[in-house]
Image: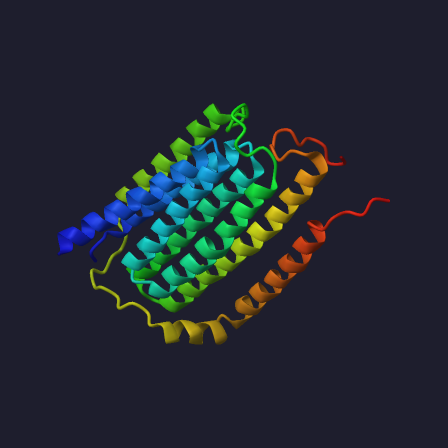
Length: 167
Length: 103
């Protein structure tokens, strides 16, 4: 049982990274969006493995349900998504590849080497009512600021994306 | 713990590196936006992994993740509005063809 759970975890992690690779490497932007969907589903699965069920649900609702739909609308509303003559990466791809590979491998090496002060005791997952209480008591300011930010993004993006009048 | 914390951190480092590569090299502006979403996801993964392995104030860290998700949504909305305006104005969203501040 434990072995099966471990295999499942590494499978979900591999699917997440594969989706991320599709996102950055697909020539057709619509396929990149599908890769992003795979990566976001994978992250939700990893949340489930870490017993954060509420966050997994929020991840699916907000990312896959809202942001991804918005991205696909954006892809369809803009021009030339599937033009085979367009290059997918710019001229810096070699250097950027080296830099990000160094950062990724270096970070992974540090993460695997460091001793993470694990007490060994398994902490019980936090129940959802605790989350609600934290949002409305200790984290209230951040929560209200977030709602203000979302309102600003709504109004501002409507203003930016409106049809300009010819004058 | 079933899965060691370091393995989750390695997955998130991989997500971060791929997102960084995409944000640096994609020519299409929507592609850059999607890569930035990948980077934010790797940060969320790290937060949850640490909240699992230390256990103190787990609820506060999970609320932080909720707020990061909300900020990512706001960022995606604003970015897509800008991309839509640029595409209407310049007929292109290839990031290296947009060179002028005042078009």
